[in-house]
Image (cartoon, rainbow, N blue to C red):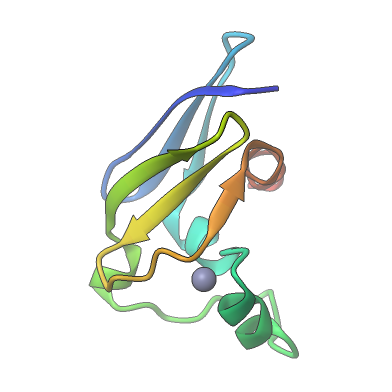
Length: 97
Ligand SMILES: [Zn+2]
């Protein structure tokens, strides 16, 4: 499944899929699941039931950049932009959330 459009507001990431479905994912959840090596390492050993408390700028989506036809890169307000969110990951987060 491919995402045709990925947008964000202050609280949610919105995904429009190519089959017409729409999902929204809490930005806290998106940030927590950042797939980059740095964040993956930081998550190790942390109780996933308890989200890290983020600063406001860490949950602000500044830019959403398409990566090929399989993923998007999200640039956050604190400058972090290493995470490549595949459509598969976005779907997984949407289904969990
Ligand atoms: Zn990251």
